[in-house]
Length: 151
Image 1 (cartoon, helix red, strand yellow):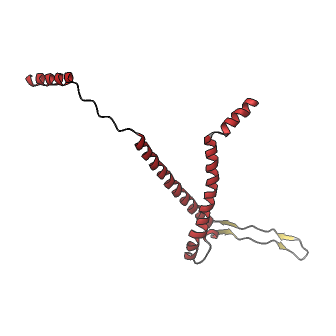
Image 2 (cartoon, one colour; image 1 turned 120 degrees about the vertical axis):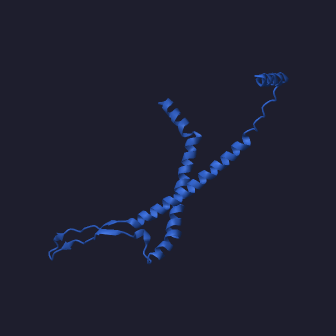
Image 3 (cartoon, helix red, strand yellow; image 1 turned 60 degrees about the horizontal axis):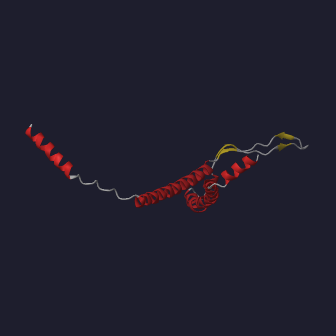
């Protein structure tokens, strides 16, 4: 059991796990910010364009809600019916949230990749020029060329 606990401590305290935990916390906070941007800045103009309706509450009602019907004696004649609706306004708002988050993540990864490539270019030494051929190689090349010309 002690070995298991030691292995768990080693796993939990690795840098990658801690980095991931920080990323999840920041991601949650970032999600709230994006939801606020969409709900408070982007959707109001859209709501204005769709005749003042709240776009987040737009829906297609398939069955209207109905209250329970009770007779004079207090007996329930028909049960209450809940509304059944397709909430496409909330779906549109969530799609806009997703697109904004995906765009920002794309831009962040693109920037990180660009910085990483710049760092790699700085770290790579300039390629060395090949050494000049020795005198023997030059002479042998000349001899070879002369022999080719005689054929």
